[in-house]
Image 1 (cartoon, each protein chain N blue to C red):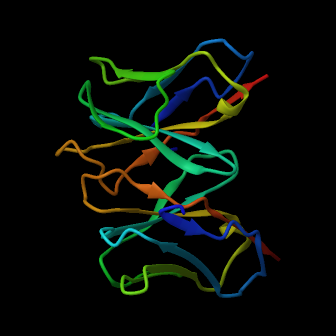
Image 2 (image 1 turned 90 degrees about the horizontal axis):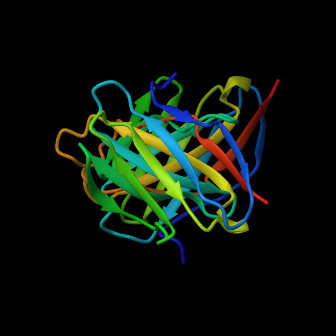
Image 3 (image 1 turned 180 degrees about the horizontal axis):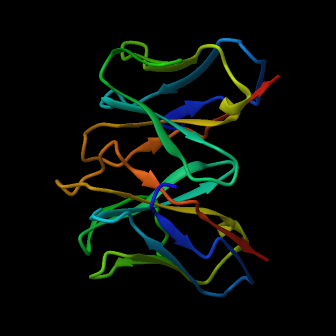
Length: 116
Length: 111
């Protein structure tokens, strides 16, 4: 068990809908990262938050947004969903004292999103 | 062209074999190289980490980095069925930079 908790584990929704994925980082970790994993694209970095503030942005669509709350949990919001958004969404956390991605990133078990 | 290329496999080997997993990359700025292991229905977990060129050994696992060829390898000795998983390489230019992952190689070790 990595200590990173993601909910829900599975989500099935229709095109055009909006969903929220939730991540609780390991105790004490200040950085949270979101990744999307699909069969053809592999693990794609979406966004990073450090202590409540956006730190780095990757290949995140404008239809997607995220935030990190004062208790350090994070939510990834996906809207106007399309079939191609079906993927595994992973959250990772690290101590990241400098606010950056270090090698000790621990991943949650992921949320499997299916858009039908 | 992707920044990091990795053969998706699957790679199927008998128990006890030596396994070689590889990645190539195009960004010469990458200095930090990692291997993650991902079991089915689980998140990736860090297996090995190396900085710049050279070798690093940890038990049955050896990671090699050849920056001149932009090529990294992970060797698994005496492979076990429990090693069956997807292995992802990852790299970054700086310790504070985001990790760029390969697509992963699926390994199956049969008894």
